[in-house]
Length: 79
Image (cartoon, rainbow, N blue to C red; front, side, top):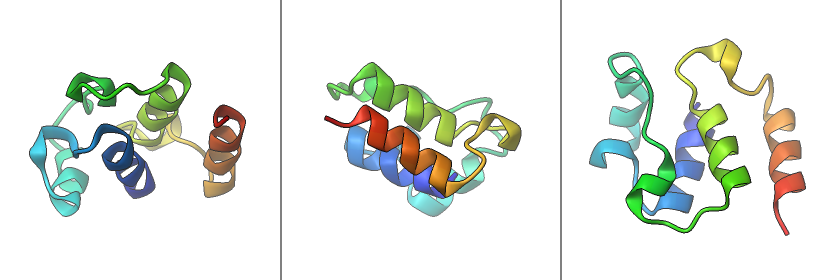
């Protein structure tokens, strides 16, 4: 989840809700889902945005099963 937040910050230029990293980690407990990183006006390719959203999914089973799985997805999606 935290790696997903770092990717979110890099891609969108900000963390969701203007929070710090620690606050964003805690926010997953009270918010239904984080906003799509493209809502911040960044030109993020669909594949990268979808990868980020999967990495920051509220429910752990919906996230990547491992860092290797996330890394493989990023490698496939990057030019």
